[in-house]
Every structure is written in structure tokens, then in C-alpha cells.
Image 1 (cartoon, rainbow, N blue to C red):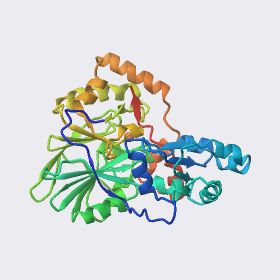
Image 2: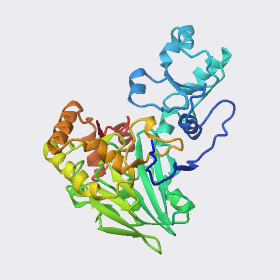
Image 3: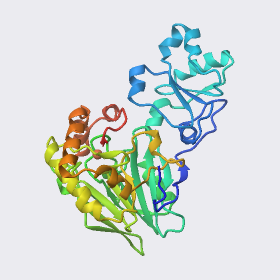
Image 4: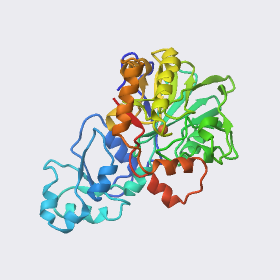
Length: 396
Ligand SMILES: [Fe+2]
């Protein structure tokens, strides 16, 4: 959560994407689900996930505002009394979540017949996987705005830096309409779209969003071997008619070409180099020891020279507790560096190496990297590859 030394107040939720909490009866949509989950105090609402336990364990909505429970559909088909008995007695509203919002209708009906207030989460997990929350992280009195665009299902965080009528998008998900619509709503034109690095956990939408509109920026090191048209990340990107300067900082370690974007010395879009509870895994190139050394140099020699009060805007959150009550994930640079660099170089390398040894890369990461380098892939396969929360962080 934020600390007293953070330069920003709590983030402010701007819009709920395509918010349409007007479903009939007890049903809610995923925007309403998000508001429910991110409330700071737990309500009597229950999210009842009826998918198979192994699928639900891989990813499911979570947050402080509601209780989450997995009771697979099969259990309702078997001993219905036993299945219903697993619900807490004080459940005020039960929101039934399935894969696509279809089979949940049956379960909600069963519960209502038993006098338990229940409805479905419209669109189910498929809709949750596409949902994005948009929070402004800059203060209202600042001359520019940064929006954090959160895809909570995967814990992916992306950004729109807006100054005047121009915008720079960073680390976009493949749901590019979100960024296009936000820019249009703000009256801003995209002047660039950048990836902080070649992502391994999710399919990037940056190249697609930029197509025919603006340059797509990626580092040469991370673009190596790919077929995408890109521009090398410039040293500075100016956004706005009275330009704000976005400085690109090379921070190799998580990938060879990892880049952080420093906005007005106050905000650091850090990619996966610094995450809320750790650093980005340095084993994606299968040269973990060498890249861990680079990571240490990036943390000490590059980020360590920035003002410690800088607000870090990472590319990923891990758990629901990484977000503040507005749904934003913002950290203080000094705090994060102190947590990571309490040891000297050799101890840092040893600790990271041992964490790498215990945390294997997910099998699909190599394929996702190929997709992000330009390999054409059917939509269904892309959706399969993206199932599950990100595993980019090596936690302390
Ligand atoms: Fe990453």
C-alpha cells in the first residue's frame, strides 16, 4: 500500500470500462464485480465460483470486499444439500461465476429456490479476463495525467501518459480498444506506443494499437529475432504541445532490453524491473546468473540514482492486497529498493538465483514471447496461453 512518502494521493478511479450494472434482478457485470471486490471492507457478498477446482485455483477474482468460494458445478449435480451447506450462513448476495456466464444461471436458480439471494456474474470468467479498470494516478493539480489501466484477472498494469492533446501508451494488453477509447474520450492523439520489454506472461497489444497511428517502441535487444515493425526506444519521448519529457532508462536484467520510463522525475513506469513484492525474474533468457548481475547494476546504478520519493508504476501486481482502495498499484521507489537491496551484490545474486531455482518458468512463456515477436497465432490459442495470473515476479 502507499506510504507517507509517496508523492501521490491515493489513485482515483476514473471509469469502469463499459460499465453496465443494469442487468435484471440479482445479476451483476464484471465492472460491478470489480467495485465489489476492491471495497476495503469485506461485505456479506459471496463470489461462488462453480468451475472445476483445478481451473479455479489457476485464476479467479479476488479482493478484500467479498468472500470467494469455489464449489464446482458437479457438486450441485451430486449432493445438492451438501453443496449449498458450504455457503456461509450470513451470505447476503451470492454471485455465481462460471466460465462464460451460462451454467451459472442453473446454480443461481437452485439457490434462489432455497431462499438464498443469488444471481450470476454476466459473461463469467471470460468477461473477467477481458475486464480493465482505469485509475488516474496523478494528482488533479498536475499539468499532465497518468492513467493506470489494470487488467485484474492477470495482474497486468499498463499506462496512458497524457499531456494536452497527446498520449503515450505503455505496456498495453491485447484489448486495444480500451486504450483507443480512453484516448478518444480524453481528446488525445496517440503519439507513441511502447513496451517496457518483451513480455512473456501476456500477449502485448502495443504493436497492434500503434499500427497506422504512431510508432511502436521496443528496445533492439528485446526485438531481436522478431518480425514486428518497431522503432528503437528513443532516449526521450516528448508528450504534449507544451511537452513533458519522458526519459527512457535502460534497465537490463529481467530482459536484456528492459526499459523504464521516467516521467517528470516523479513517476517511474518500471516494467518488471521493480514489482510490488520483488523483482522481475531474470531467467527468461536461460542465462539467469548473468542477467541477475545486470539486474543488480540496473537497480543500484540506474534506479538507485533516481529520487527515492519517485512513484513506481510497475507492469504487474501480484495479489489483491497490492492495490489501494481505488484499485491502483503504486509504490515508493526508495521503499522498493530498500527491500531488494538490503544485501550486498553477492547476497543479492545468491538470493535471486535460489528463488529462480525454486520457481520454474511457466511452459507457455516461450510461446507467448514468440507471439509477441510477431508469430501469427489464432485467437483461441492466445486466450489459452493467457490463462492464469502472471508469474513474472521473484518474491522476496
Ligand atoms: Fe515481464
